Length: 115
Image (cartoon, rainbow, N blue to C red; front, side, top):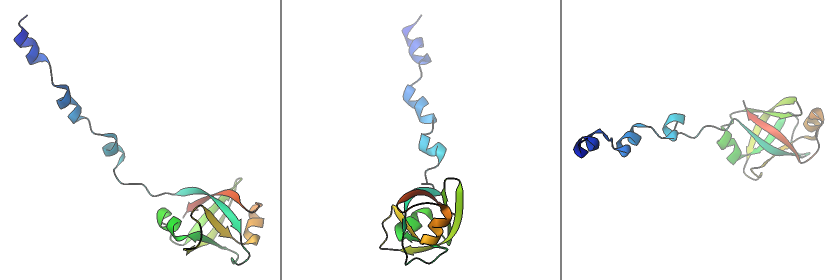
């Protein structure tokens, strides 16, 4: 065989790799909206029943409009979301009555879902 014909048959690997799209292009470049998050729930008597105090940063991150759903041990409850700056991002504050309905104690971990 002629060495010149072998070089013609070899394809440049870099040109082949350029055809394959990166993983970020396949999945989508935009960051997805967080639909649910595990947070600590705290019992606060100043919170009215049927509502939940959430940090404003978490509200923006999850794009919470008006209501949220708290889920723990197979039980779910819908509550009105109220955004506040002073609340830590990893916790939400609820009324003692709502926590009693769910059967959970103070500082328990729950799943927060945006509706």
